[in-house]
Amino acid sequence: SASCCSELPFPPSMDSLLPSSSLPQPPPPSSPSAQDSFPSPLSPSHNPSLLSFDSRLPSLQRNPSFTSSISVASDPQPLVAATALSGSIPASGKLHSPGRTASLGPIGNAQFVVGMPDSSELTERGELKVFDSVDELAAGLADYVAELSEAAVKERGSFAVALSGGSLISALRNLSDQPHLKTIDWSRWHVFWADERVVPRNHPDSNYKLAKEGLLSKVPILPSQVYSINDALSAEAAADDYEFGLRQLVKTKVVNVFMTSDCPRFDLILLGMGPDGHVASLFPHHPLTQDNEKWIAFLTDSPKPPPERITFTFPVINSAANVVFVVTGANKAEVLGKIFAEDLPSGELPAQMVSPLNGKLVWFLDKESASKLPVSQSPSEGIL
Image (cartoon, rainbow, N blue to C red):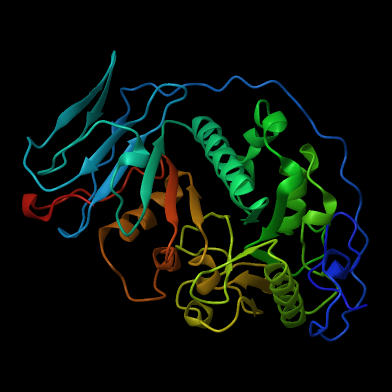
């Protein structure tokens, strides 16, 4: 029978996962390439480092109508959250938690509340979690993903997550450490890609290869529940094939459906961001940033090689229950500053177009990437 989006590491037709029905069939694709099996899961011990509470929180500029939260994360102690509200305090200050202090730089006029980030009010741009180092970010990210996985499994019996490429996979490395290796119910995970390069699965540019080597081969995830593209197809055919397979998995409720449309509602979409503000394979000023029809789009003119790719569109990204940006490094600082400083024309900075319709957006940043979040030039403007 005709295949849908291919599975990993054995890519037989996804039809075997679906109930017998009269579902429409796509044109028969070429046979997908062979893949090797995952090795046994790894289980190294893990002792996460803690964040010192003298870290400087960035100050941010905002439209006066917005409300924001900034948090510095620490494990296992409570988080210190700074929530920017209307009010008036001196232009700098300190947040106190039992035995610890977080310093704040020049911030204009604002009122601050100490508490857990989840109790903070959020802006249109989402919640910010700023970590002192990439290692501490990785530990915090693993905890956060594990919590979302547990909640989704309890609520609907599965966890549908979409990955991207780049440095994101490295940031997920702690998921293969204890305690997460043992406590996460990996048998309920269904893994997709928010974007993929149309190259063989063993090619260095393959996001599948990156995720397999960096995470998937190290955890006891079911191969039949990891959905890679059919790399034997053209970019256009691969995108159609992947969307067809995703539609079948929405019909069978492996992936949830958005409440007011037929869009898939992923439990979590994990995204990185390029120095140009691109997200998934949605690049600045590219026509695909305005595509509201397709779930999965293709491009053959990517400004970043390789040129042929498939990608989730914004309707799919913004239908997710949770979207997490993972952004690290000083080379991302300038574009992050622009994203949080002002509203730019649609398509100019694709990352600014990520705004879940009925979900949660969280930014995991290290202090290098957060270093240029803009400082208010006028006390009347507030922050963020």
